Image (cartoon, rainbow, N blue to C red; front, side, top):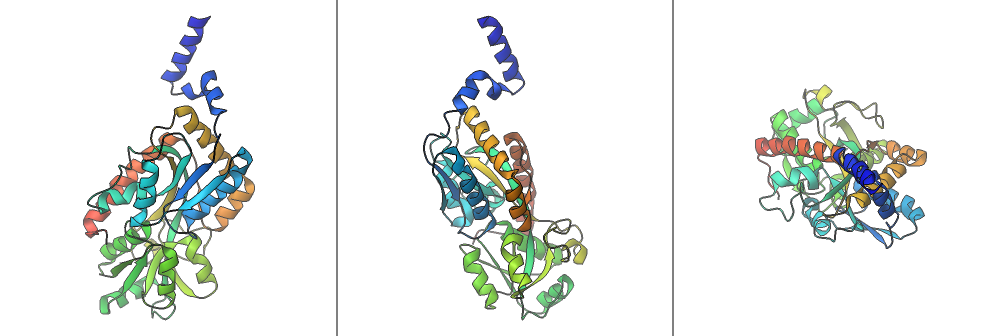
Length: 325
């Protein structure tokens, strides 16, 4: 009987299904036994913060406190590094971004962590296009007019920090449009938006959930979204690609990661609990209404996607000559 059971477990392991074995299921039942911390690498108010707080709220049913800890700075590197160096027990997680887990490796000369090795992948969470927004006094009402203006006079674009997709969307725009707008990095969108509204910077490629309300109430002008297709949250706003720069595409994405070395059974328990939350009708309605497209999956799918994004953005960084400010 024991030999037969061992053969079954060996077969499961060979199929990558060892986490479904009885021992693993038993181990999963012991998580969580203490408070869970979700680190957000940017200030409150943006898409990563929203996702973290949704998880924290819904995970209240697990019987342990869940805190959201905003640790902004260095394009997200400060917060991500905290998790990269935390114990591998499943109680310290981070909402990683395209910046912290793809772009920054090429943008920064020295990284405090290896984004491909120093984390336990949990699941892809969601993605959103960026929205090209301009101060309402800027004399441009579409992408072509903005390009013409940028060729005639100096323009600057703000970002939530070097290495974010907000930053690299602007650099990609510079390269593909043949213009030289100046990048002005901030410690987060909460610092950048007031300067954009006040005209100290002229434009920004902000996340749709953050900037769309400002467009709808007339505080900013929304010229285009950076995705390949129009956003369901803003179907009347064209894409950059259809507005005069064919092939332009840049999206922000967010994944859930844990500290390195989390046991497989705990990793898959966190994955299952996350997928459960993201499939809830009220969560889907809230996030979709903010322009976030949910697309959860396996840890392995997240790794494959992250590897492809690392290659893609390394090329953009090299071609644009972008550097961390």
